[in-house]
Image (cartoon, rainbow, N blue to C red; front, top):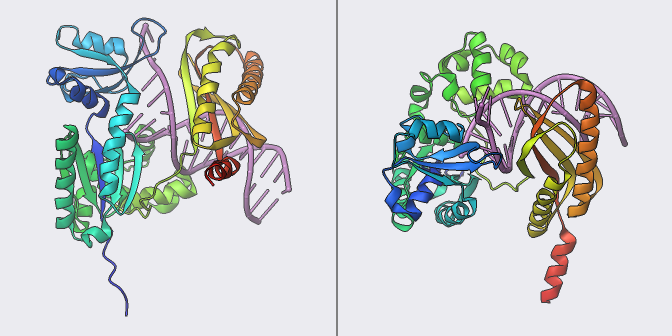
Length: 372
DNA sequence: AATACCGGCGAGT
DNA sequence: TCATACTCGCCGGTATT
């Protein structure tokens, strides 16, 4: 006698143009106007990039990642356009409330960013896609009534298909791709539409004559493995078939980083002062999450926007602001010595990354004992 | 031979 | 020139055990 195992049902939820929508909710008078949420780098008055824009702004060509100055040029005749500095703390508070709602509606839950999450609802729906769709409508309605916010819901047989469903129905959509329709949905797509295939991978595939997902699904496995490696090659083929076995699970954060734009480009290590707040922030974050790091790294971004990194693994995990800073300064000193020999170059942005995070169980025990 | 570490690259929000 | 701040994952090369 075997128990009935319903086919997996996964819901992906994506909060529409999240940062900009948070601003619309906070101040409804800006709804209908172009709303542009900006990260001001502080280098000059207006330098920086667009983080998110609402759909009014997007329809005019103001997309994520473009320079703020360009966005202003595009919208300069539009006197109603609203440019706001990113207020990540506020967005996180809104996000936390909504994620709480979503978590309560799922058996397994995985938040993948501040505005996206997956819900495994297999047993709740008993594998029934009509039940899943009703649940999707309920989720949309609840977020709308409690937070006055729209979202897009995608439903599929795994995370990939749920995500593909979401991406093809934004914004304010509800899209179900039932298992029978997976091939029909996927085959005609250009490979660049697949989640995880960006411009570089798309171009590589084009050189071997693979343009559509159907062609990728039929592509020669050896060729793919030769080009993309023994993991990515087979994964690409699976993706093209709409297959994805990855479970919906909450993952612990594996790295923290902080990065800033320098007031002026550096040709030598003359910005040690600027690193102190970064180190402090990361140290605080470690302490508050009861973690210590075993690996400390630096990030340097050149004026050509090339990313360079150096890192060091230490023997005893640390939370210490001073220790992190000391290693970071060593790494930057070495880095500039090396690069000096290599030729002239300029560093635009610098940062610190900490990885190999390990729980500080000793602190946990102490905290418990305090209560005993 | 297996594992760890390192730096680069790519993708996504 | 105009180009943020994050996080995750894989690749290949090299070092360590």
